[in-house]
Image (cartoon, one colour):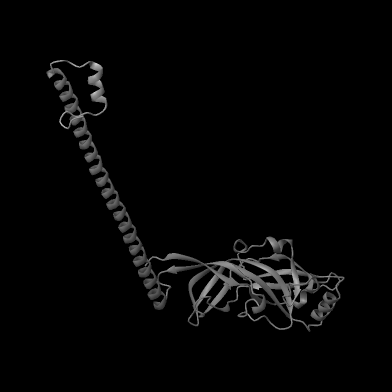
Length: 296
């Protein structure tokens, strides 16, 4: 059975993932450290409509990532706190994508002036702070035929990273944005009608298509009924107008015929009189509507 893409735009919150640190990459003099900020490791999420679990995989093909911000440098924050400049510890830049795109690393530079940044850098060096997390928006998500433990896999084929954070504990991948500061964004979800769909999904799709078909059929009948009513009204109006026009024409013809009779009888009566009237008097009788049959 050929598969047919089905696209839908939904609203979802910003996502977070753990980003592993490479401790051997630390440069104390430059205050830099290399962080593997993204990998293709599946992360369990929950469906925005059904609440059922699915695996999210990030495509690390650079063509699938909006990197404009990152290439200019994105903020390194203290625990995803984006509401104050005091929470900015440094900058992350220079994302690289090795062949195979299984992971991507970047360089983090800590501030030389910010007391909190200097403290965090020292604790990273001492391996007291080891956990990183990054926030990103998924713009396009595609369902695949792949399953892990019976759970479907979706691949983010268009997404944008916004910030990288040092955190006290690993990010909860299922938390999304914090409830009190949740900001939703649009995400296009692409699924396929075909062999990769479950029986429940196929049933729901059939029901949705049947519902849509009935709605379209009902709308079509409604429009046809309205058009028929308009035609009937138009015909009735045309019929009434035609009858009124015919009646007016016949009445006008009778009036003309009657007027001709009246004028002819006045002139006939004038001719029959022993003493003919002047023409002006005859015209006066004609003009004032005198009818010989009814008298002056």
